[in-house]
Amino acid sequence: MFVDLDRDGALDVNTSTEGSSQRVFVKWSPPESTRRLEPAAWRQDVFPATAGVTRWMFAAAAQLDGRHGVDLVLGGRTGGGSGRSTLGWLEAPAAARDGAGWRWYPLLEMGWTMTLQIEDMDGDGDTDILYSDRTGATRGVYWLENPGAARVSPGSGWTRHGVVATDEHQIMFLYSGDVDGDGRRDIAVGIERERVDAKDPDRYSQLRWLRREDRSGDRWTEHVLALPGNIGNIKGVAIGDLDRDGRADIAVSCENATGERRGVFWLRQPERATGGAWAARDISGAPGIKFDLIGAPRSGRRRRSRRPDQRETPPGSDLPENPVPYP
Ligand SMILES: [Ca+2]
Ligand SMILES: [Ca+2]
Ligand SMILES: [Ca+2]
Ligand SMILES: [Ca+2]
Image (cartoon, rainbow, N blue to C red):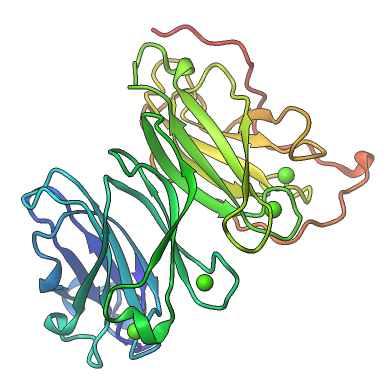
């Protein structure tokens, strides 16, 4: 992740590790733009408070306590030395380059952090934490309500709100954005319904989008989109207007996209988000088997649609709905 942690105007690089390392690092950028291509001008530090806490999976930056520089929200997965999977935040000290001065506040135990996204989910002006938890008893899509800058430092008082609480097998990456153009930000997420059988991915993947019904962040209506038959297992999703027709579309990445199956494609939104079929269009072609996190240009407000005779042909080729046999 690129983020200016020491407030010198140059983006630093934040990295998280799992495996046997299980630490969170920062590469401090040289402030002079002319020296950024010199490896020796960069300096790496570790945040000691993160050592061995969990297998670190995902990081996001947010000013949580209103003090000093931007803070880091961090999440892990189970299976590391500690056996724990924790989501929490790392408080920036006055002197950001003092790695040992960064203080760790665990917020909750979870299964496997897939996405961490900083977003004001209840519209009260402070940043909340939207996340997806892939496995275990806590799997689903949730957000943690920021208790206010004065109360975040004790690390308590964060309330968890459910968006998708499910017993489906695994919850994958999520992405927030306004799908239906009503001015409220919705959520899209990939779901694996049962344990993956690489020979038959069609049965197991599902793409849902959650329509936000009001600004509370507690009322969502779930919609399931029909998928083409010749794709892998859904891993990542991204909301963005890919053909610039004023309606948000959804880009999708997959794993297990062997043979002729597609690993990256997009679904084009029809006239109404909640009515009609979303046409699937190819992005990656057949090459490639495993694709991971995917992003998209952020959608703005819905623009007036072009007249039909002015519409451009959307990029990519059509994906047929009928399944392609597994090799
Ligand atoms: Ca701060
Ligand atoms: Ca908020
Ligand atoms: Ca919306
Ligand atoms: Ca579109």
